[in-house]
Amino acid sequence: MRLRDRLGLSEQRQRQLSRGMQLTLFGLLFIALERQEPALLVTVGIGLSVTFLPAILERDHEIPMDAGLTLWITAAAFLHTFGVVGIPGTGNSLYGAIPIYDNITHALSASVVAGVGYAAVRAFDEHSEGIHLPPRFMFVFILVFVVAFGVVWEILEFSIAQAAAALGSETTGFSQHGLDDTLLDLVFDALGGVIVAIWGAAHLTAVSDAVWERLRGVES
Image (cartoon, rainbow, N blue to C red):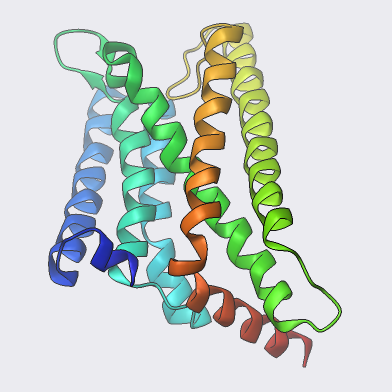
């Protein structure tokens, strides 16, 4: 069963949701310009760019990206980007107004990262005669991979925040609230990795096969 079937939404509806998120992010670009906030403009620009990755991968690299996978990636980029935009009249963002919002975006973003790692490693595992990874090892690898990425991300957030403070400017979407908050972020990163480790084989097989064929084409 494909991811789009598990979501209980038609392929057309999922594509409509993805397009709606892209249009919303495009609108946020104008908000960032109107507010004259360079950090917000960069954040929205990066988020919008990520939403076009599925189409680019499918068109230029022949990686199959069905509506469910596209919605998954788009939602991760959209929720993070939308969360850093200040709520009018409050001076606060969704990250600040809704404590669990940060946890949700971390788990969703981590699941996308884990999906990338899973698809790449499974491509070698399934198609290379010299490599065999037991299911338990694959599970552990996904967890280690996504947590390691989460640690790098937390270090990046801290570095950007410190650099911005030293320059007397503000950051958008790159803030930390103590060690407890960082550890909780890593817990939800791991949760996203667990989700992919459990259900990845059911939804990322075609992607793994395409990645392997692409790698073979590069080698030849």
